[in-house]
Length: 146
Image (cartoon, rainbow, N blue to C red; front, top):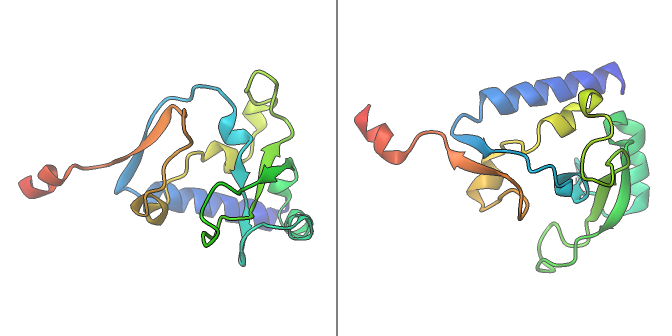
């Protein structure tokens, strides 16, 4: 990972933690590995849909070099931006669903599930069966009390 990419990852991690306070992540990891085997990657043009785009992304961002192509999104509406996107799997995922280098994992992995307010507002959730879930940080009634 280049210094530039590392700094970008750290800045994004901090922004997610500081400025996404409307939502919180609750729950606990079930260590199933599902989040490590159904990864969507994107660049400035949208979701990665070709092997050529993936190779280009790997050259630009070393933090995605641990991922391998694991499939393609086809179970959504054809008009969805996700349709046709490549799915990725982490190559250090062990057979039991645990990370093969947990203490050395990247910020990309450490930040799962990351809070993206737009994603949540549009109905986005964590993966089916995941022990984590998104919740509102402060209930509506609590705002009325202030």
